[in-house]
Image (cartoon, rainbow, N blue to C red):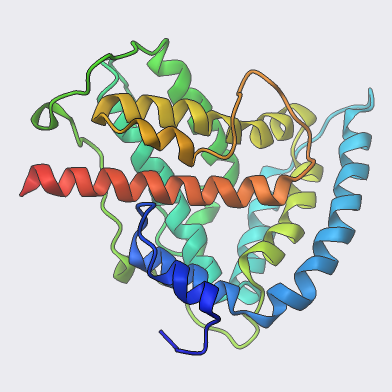
Length: 278
């Protein structure tokens, strides 16, 4: 890492109080260093936040609903290929893997028979046409329904009794992204552009469910913390209270904090898995 980072960035670069993999930290700090994040992002977020609420309002009117999942995926993948920065694309691919691993861990240790584990582990941008953002949300809801009511635990499960079935450790060398000179947009700027497309090209129910799916972070944290006996994990969930449905206000921050949350839990669980393996 360069020594040109500010004192604060240097401080968080060395802060491991919250479990997070070094690869993720390096990608995020490089994303923070992107000049477009500090110049273009505020303008994009201001403009598209207004546009998002207008689209949200129109979609809530009693009009015929429509969706275009395939078009949505094609537009996102095309945009990621040509305009989203290398590190932001890697963070997006990592997010599929981190959340899939966490949910597969919960499913394997839920005490229920789960027929279909999550298989959303894209390695390239093109894979996201199949491992879609839409399916990412729907698979989360399906798995929660399949697990049924959670059996709260007063004591953690013994480490040698935990199941790691379907867990796929993240290997950064497996991700394949072809660099392009036009790939300049940081993670948050890219999301500002994506969020209106999602609202427009999903039905109002699909979009409402997708942006409220973040609130299941608290439920996920509670379940993982009970399994491994680390109650502090509930503090890592920024998005909370899944029974209270929200609209698109503050969506960019909620989305970003959801990404951090999955990185924290993945790193924690991977450390537990390695301890058991060793």
